[in-house]
Length: 305
Image 1 (cartoon, rainbow, N blue to C red):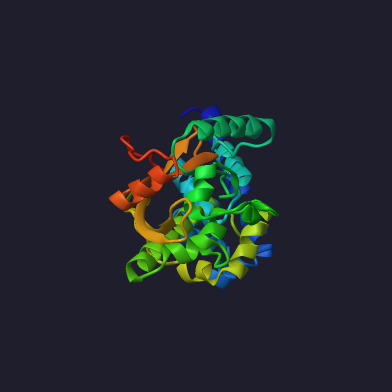
Image 2: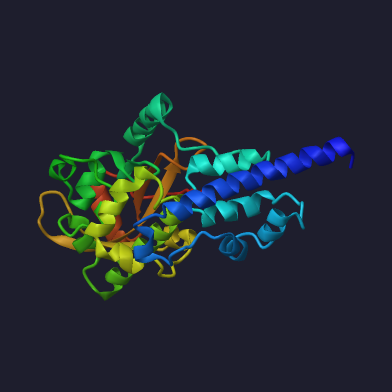
């Protein structure tokens, strides 16, 4: 390696370490207040970072190692530091790595949501449009019919998928956990959802945009209960039917059905996307048909990104 290349590599490594240290000191001086309530408290020391995320970190700081951390190691460091999306990209760019696409916003998001609404309008199944923070920003009539929802539930703030699952004042929770088997499936689906949300949003306790989620954590004790519970894989959750007590038009009587929840990508990004529901047994096919929905789904779901 030439002298100029050595100097360039040394400058790049210094830039990376400076970025890491800036973020580490910020976390140490202002740790997330909510995080300590449900996960182990981090001290954000150099030694702890070395032990938890990058086994050569102390050597890098002292000059005993000059090897630039690879992309995966930088992501492990970012996870340890609870970095926001912007901070993760700052860290990646400091090392010359390609940044992660950030969630859509502004006019770009509006255009994609318009596209999603058009797709949802043509979908022959109950469905809803969901953002990256699980806010429900669109739904079709079949969705409200199947799950017994009315405009009352959508009157104030846009509901969130967490609300749909955990809120005892909404009909979905009781109708999804009516016996021992359905209760177990309701719990497993909730746990998978929480673990997936944690994985997609590592900055939950440092980014102000998650204030609403913190309020939901106070409202729904199951979020604490399920936080560190082991879950199925997302694929297992997608392929294992859920239970629901559904009613048919012009009838107050409810019958148990089984359905699968799938999702449809709108763009190359994971969100926003369409969550939709297909029947998984004969009883469900009868209910879907009564509400004017398709009764067969001949394609497999797209996998979570």
